[in-house]
Amino acid sequence: MKSKKIHPEYQYLELLKELVEKGVVQKDINTGVKTYSKFGAQLRFDLSEGFPLLTTKKVWWKGVLYELYWFLTGQSNIKFLVDNDIHIWDDYPYKIYREKIAKGKLPDMSKEEFIEKIKTNKRYAEKYGNLPNIYGELWRRWPAKGRTIDQVEWVINEIKNDPDAHNLIVNSWNPEYLYGMAKPQEASRFPICHNLYQLNVKNGRVCLHLYQRSADIFLGVPFNIASYALLTLIFARVTGYEPGEFIHSFGDVHIYENHLEQAREQLKRKPKKFPIVIINPKVKKLTDLLPEHITLENYNPHPPIKAELTVSGGYFAKGQKPNKFKR
Image (cartoon, rainbow, N blue to C red; front, side, top):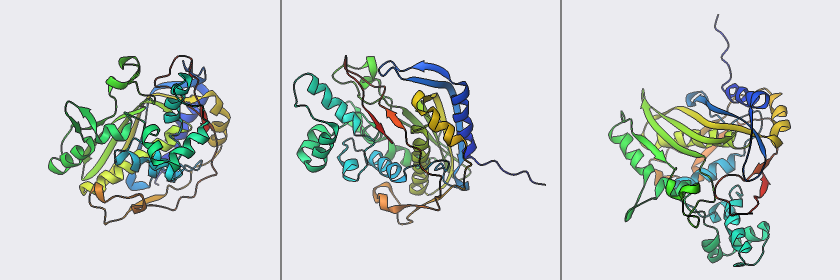
């Protein structure tokens, strides 16, 4: 008699439960918010068995899709996202703007007013909507002496030329712009969290292994799982292979104290069948890809559970307080 296969979403739920019940208490240095954490964990999803968009709460698919497209096209200005009503990155350029307000260099302005100007004024967006040294820029335009390096295109070509390669790494962790290693005026205002991924072809299937040095299990990780699972599908499509596994490894994985009740609510729910993602077969290379070429089918999750996102990490000017918003 065959044993019933455990739904792959239980990997996530078991890690969530462990953090709620046994997480080590720590405190964010900038916000003072407590987290309950663990160092070192891993989830694995076989993409031939469905797309791992979590079902025990609704995950915002449009945000996943448009953010990943933003990364893959090498963009670092939030105007593309704002124009498509994606506001998950609004706080970080506004964080830079607020530093200038504090120094008396710019007039005071609410975040809502700031984002409206980004949306309606292209020149203003070019000046204030940029978020330097972020994923898309580092994936597609890594700064080097007298040139930039397109890591994504390199990886695609390497897979085509040598599918047995073990060196297919895309890195987002550039110490030149991070924390105390950077010059203050150049330090990234956003902390690079999902900092490198490696691709590997096994049995004719493209697999992707993400290392995430810091992970917000309740708000961020469901989004990250979906984003990098989708990235795996895209790499498979443009290299001519089938999709394999998405492996998600964590450094510090944690839950914020203000997410505990929401997590307990989610843990009461049972996973449903994973949806599927279809990429238009006309997409043969990365430059062919548009968001409308990717469709999600048969997604029937439990209702969403709202929670406040704490904007922590990265460079904070002395005395600067973080913003918070809901995802």
